Length: 127
Picture 1 (cartoon, helix red, strand yellow):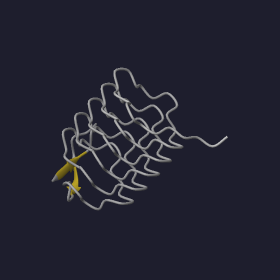
Picture 2 (tube, rainbow, N blue to C red):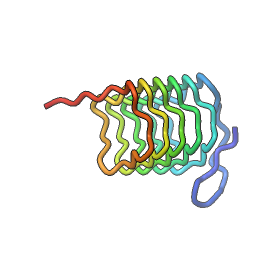
Picture 3 (cartoon, rainbow, N blue to C red):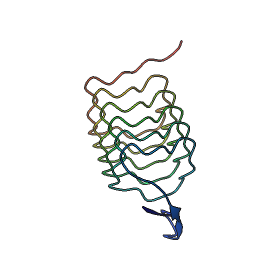
Picture 4 (cartoon, rainbow, N blue to C red):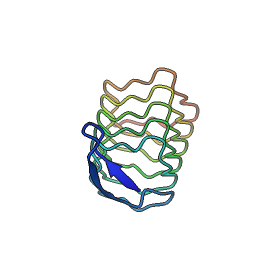
């Protein structure tokens, strides 16, 4: 899949953006991945800050310790995703489906969760 910069529309490169892809540690900040199907993909420790994942399928994706700060995840499907210790500060999760998602120790400061479905989501924080 051709990946483009979200703001300039310039081509960043070609990546295997598909279900089950291994993108662990990838730098995809400010990219347009709206409507992408990354179900089951490994995005652990990836830099996805400022990216557009609106309406994307990230079900069962591994996003532990990923930088998702300022990311647009509106309407995204994140059911059963692993977001433990992810940075979601300032992210737009409005209308996202987060059923049974692992959000333990995730940074949700300033995140927009309006209309998000959180049934069965796991929130666990250290004291």
